[in-house]
Length: 138
Image 1 (tube, rainbow, N blue to C red):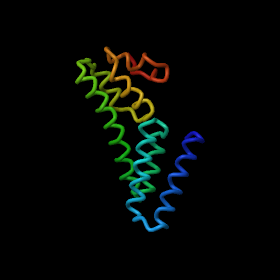
Image 2: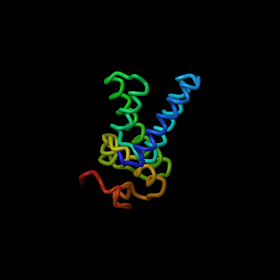
Image 3: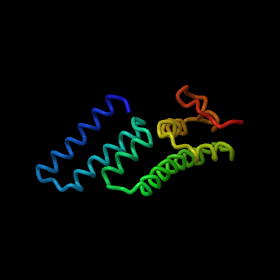
Image 4: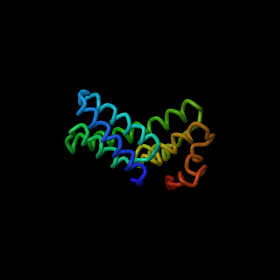
């Protein structure tokens, strides 16, 4: 996690603690923190592991629940990418479909989702920007 993101996260946690001390219901404070974590993940500022770890702590999750959540979150991102491509009429090979649905790097998945809005060929997801160069093998 980069220092700026870490500082933002610490501030958000401090606010949640302060809200609770001032009488705000803990669930409401936790919800605000959860929303902040979601925003960080959408910006690609947190890895899937970091996001899961923080949400697990916040929610008191078991390891099994946290692993299942992380897997589901990554699968949801991949499904969104494939859905956007499908709705735009961009064909996706089985190879690319399989590749996307097995990724867990939130930064890459977020970048690919952004690109899915504009590419005309699914392979362009992996060649349009250098930061998105992780690609399936031919």
